[in-house]
Image 1 (spheres, one colour):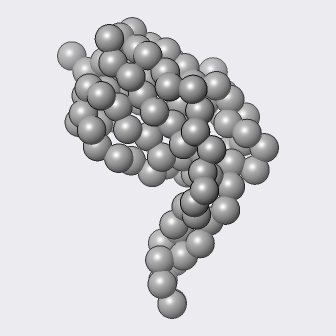
Image 2: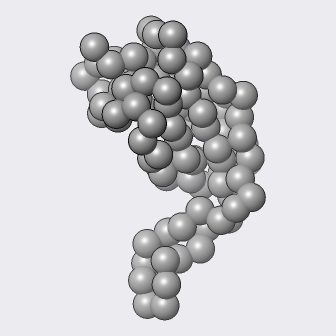
Length: 99
């Protein structure tokens, strides 16, 4: 069984003068870790959440939505890789172990 950690961010800055790359601003809010083998969902993102950071203990596939169900056809992320994703309040992330 793998674990997915999710940190939510409300405040977003920019990478530098004249650059448009959004950078989540700490402190973030950590969700309860999600354990998964088959598809499993996180808790709903809080009011004002704009970005999340995710990392998992094993390779996984993920989707984001209001009631997401991850499949092995979704985007794959290698184990121990930090990923930042733009999201909307109330959405969730679902993960499934990579085949």
